[in-house]
Image (cartoon, rainbow, N blue to C red; front, top):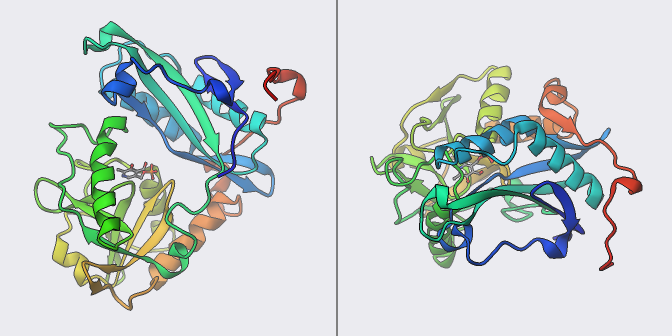
Length: 317
Ligand SMILES: Cc1ncc(COP(=O)(O)O)c(C=O)c1O
């Protein structure tokens, strides 16, 4: 993991060593913070952020869902902060983690504290391991149920929601799998711990309905890419046994990108390797994020260069 020299805190770049949150804050104590996971790719024209404004908007939507009345930033400010944090750290490609956390508020109301904004970046390559993209991975059905929106809202990327993801993924890996598939309270497939899920059967692509999942930006991008390639994409409930008899199952997300599930619950899926539809979508996605696809210009936000005079002085270096 490449380490960053700068982090964005509130309204300015700061030395990364200052990137600590107050211990006595609802953000830390109760997981009351909302965040995004975004990727910046090294394109032929320099670093560019994938679906920047959609991610910035989802961050603000998450903050709105959990009840912040006054947001500390606008979409334009999120975009500017992210661009400057990447440029200052001179990363060609990186993972980006903006967050709005509730400072103070130990009496447990939103009004009792103050929302604060941070952006961290780091170099993070293959999230599910280098081999995953090529060979696919092995998954199990988690014993933990995905959150119901009336328990914890799934449209918001709330830090506390990810306790459930960590429980499921830890259980999965301790049992020898790579990733966990979480069923919703209705018993149908919801999503994985940090990815949305697709099934391919008889050349039709199916994915789960939006109500109970995080509306993934990669998911939405792949629906468009798949339709561009001429596939029918159907959003409908998917049962556990429909996974077992699929021709292909794949998952997608900002961190994971596009990865096949070659085995689920000890059952081989299709040919037991990355199938042709998954492979075609992986290739389209790779072209897209590297700036070599017809949709790249619309979906990539190039990072403006920064002069050294725009950088804060790092006395600690
Ligand atoms: C629970 C969950 N589902 C799905 C996704 C995929 O979303 P995206 O493609 O926007 O990264 C993520 C990752 O952010 C996630 O945490």
